[in-house]
Length: 137
Image 1 (cartoon, helix red, strand yellow):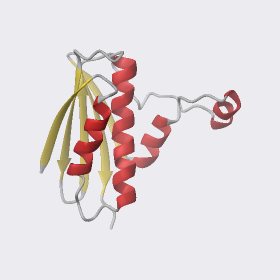
Image 2 (cartoon, helix red, strand yellow; image 1 turned 120 degrees about the vertical axis):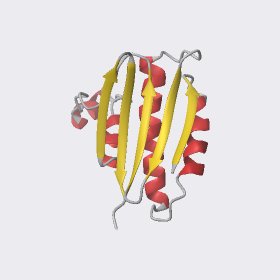
Image 3 (cartoon, helix red, strand yellow; image 1 turned 45 degrees about the horizontal axis):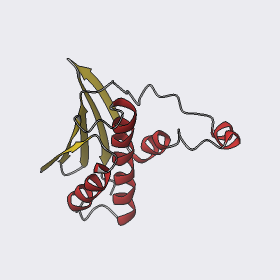
Image 4 (cartoon, one colour; image 1 turned 180 degrees about the vertical axis):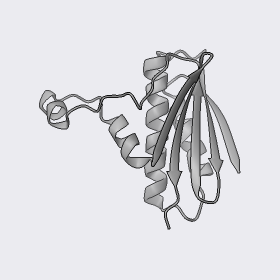
């Protein structure tokens, strides 16, 4: 099964994204906690793209496709903004972040902990980030 949504690059679109994920993540093998964690991870990637790659430009958009198979979920996030490869992201030292009382920098850590696999590619101006969550029995 596949589900798709296009959201425009405004932070107000994140509530539309959360609603889409709430309606899409109905698989019985996912606990409520897993659904919330997955939503947090997908929203974090999209928020980073909206804010950092697109500077909240409402003329730009992000496409999200959710692909469901019997053993995994694939969240394919595509945009045409400045490429942000979260695989190359250097995880900040948490003690340093805490000491500096910084608010940013922790979301990608959560994405990497929540998702089982992350893939990134950039081809002819289109960036694709795949977040993969395996169903564990």
